[in-house]
Length: 190
Length: 109
Picture 1 (spheres, helix red, strand yellow):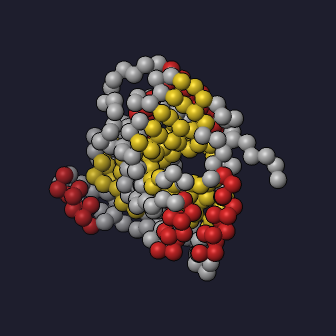
Picture 2: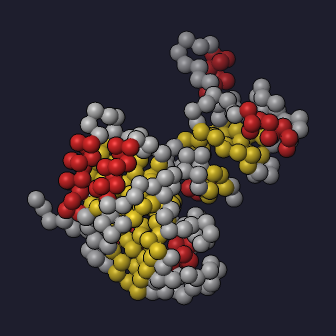
């Protein structure tokens, strides 16, 4: 099998917040009845985390389950465990209407670390990044400048976001540029 | 700027996160219909000054279509609701009646 390479080759930059490529990540797109216990429990097992409700993101040390739409979640896991995860989900949901696909190479995952990350994101997205509107545990699919992205906070001072692989360099450059200038203090800093 | 709540995600979406889909609740007239009906379906649209019903797609989010009722003059949003209906929900119509007495949109009032 060919060597797994992330879209950004481990790029990182330090500005008012640190922006870095998190490297290859296992990502499984799961579609089906999100209310079904079988689907929820197998996603919990594969990601080692909880199962989110509407608009939620459940994160653990080993992975995450991100709510993408009323009939879709994205299960994050280690890159080398994605194929096994698809097999497990397929086995658990056999006979029910569902879809589970390994989309690990479709997207890039970028991490932001620093107290000013809300403001850095707010420079690029129309979504409300205020601490009262966007909290850890929420998944916000939105727009960063001209492309789609999904953002979730892993703590008050760290966030991760996904974007399509083909625009990973664009998104990284946007974030690096937004992080280059100091905070103006429009949003409360954690 | 228009801000609509996606009824599927529950998030407040900025206008730029959405794709506009034009007038809501159109009845399709295809093969077998007469020319007047077909013209009505294909070309003739409401252009109200006031209450309007539209289709929007949460393009930068869940990707689902939904409906929105809003005022074209003030951009006041009366409400949003899922797309799997053929007419606006009764409670939304009641709410619009309270806010805009005497409003009319097609055969709704």
